Amino acid sequence: MSWRSRASRRQRSSTRIVATRTGTLVIDQDSGTLVRTDGDGVPIARLSIGRDPGLLAFDPDRSVAFVADRERDRVVVVDVGDAVQLATTFALPPEPFGVALTPDASTLLVSTIADH
Image (cartoon, rainbow, N blue to C red; front, side, top):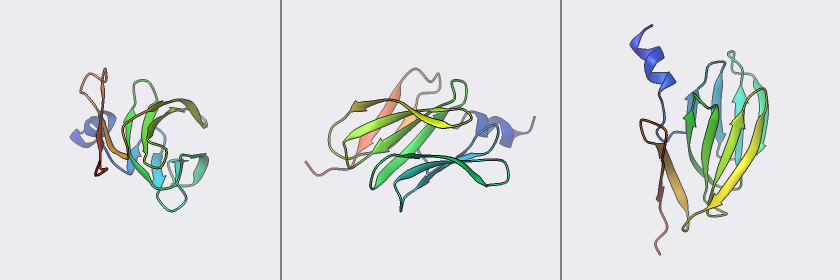
């Protein structure tokens, strides 16, 4: 296993695109959608997050993505399988933007950018 493949499996910090075992997860900033692609980059599933989404973090061990929804002041938790499905949401202070998982994936860290 190369360093690159080990690093991508453990990618848990904020980003707009993350490699998964079978493709990618991408935040489409223009549409406010989380897009899952196959290994060739072809979109195979979509989930609307909301206007002006923030960043995402992905836990490959649980196949769960966490996406900051700036417009609705929440984090969207997404089950990533053959489809991308809303698992749950939780409310946050205004304008969450960055999300990251701790190395053991037990805690989700969230930063906000609101000027409140």
